[in-house]
Structures are given as C-alpha cells and as structure tokens.
Length: 61
Image (cartoon, rainbow, N blue to C red; front, top):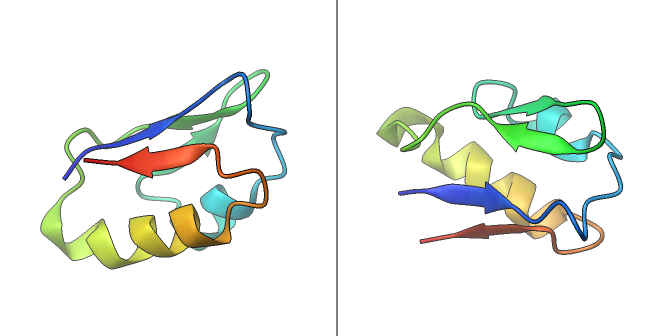
C-alpha cells in the first residue's frame, strides 16, 4: 500500500504523525510520508491516520 499527503490540503495539524509516526513525519509546511510503500505492519495505523485527517489530505492506493 502507498499513501500520500496532498500539500495543498494539509494544515500541518500533526494528527497523522501522532497516529502513525513510522509512516508520517512533519516537514516544514506539511506532513510527509517516510515509508513508501507502507510496511504491512503499519497499514492499519496509516489508514487510521487517513480516516482521522480533518482536511482529508491523506489518500492511499
């Protein structure tokens, strides 16, 4: 699975980093994906971060 963060939508709230720090980290202006592809053991937390994103900036394939 691959996840991405849309930098035009991300408000840098940090929820995804709190939810899944092995997949996301905060960059200067928005969250960034640090695990591409997402290892199977982190897929659930990555999907949880996607669901919880208040501006729907995270998507997966």
